[in-house]
Image (cartoon, rainbow, N blue to C red; front, top):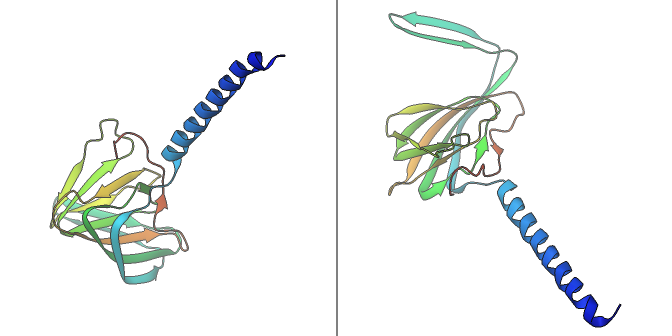
Length: 170
């Protein structure tokens, strides 16, 4: 084969390599974990909870809590600067979140419209479990402060970093 005949093949090989490299880079960027940014956390308390079964009703209100086996209960206060976020993540156990100040903007990874739900000072919400990928962002102009109570299996991580699901532009 002559040199002239091998040049087009060399160019094609380089173009294929570049396309594969860029494709892997784009794919890798979408599957990498997304850690939080601008978040400070202070653990307020932690304890071990024996199995419980509690049921209470008062008028039209009721609550039922049942655990199986030991649980780890942790209370933390998180502060998120304006523009900060928790990163895309999921949880192995439930969390109850109280917004102490600021506004928490919550996005679900399974929402194709990327429609946020906002929680203002004094509101509370249950952070989803079961592998539901989500992110909480501070899109306001003042610090967001949340107090979180987590129920976890002993030794489990409080959160699992997850790749960006691709439904939102961030």
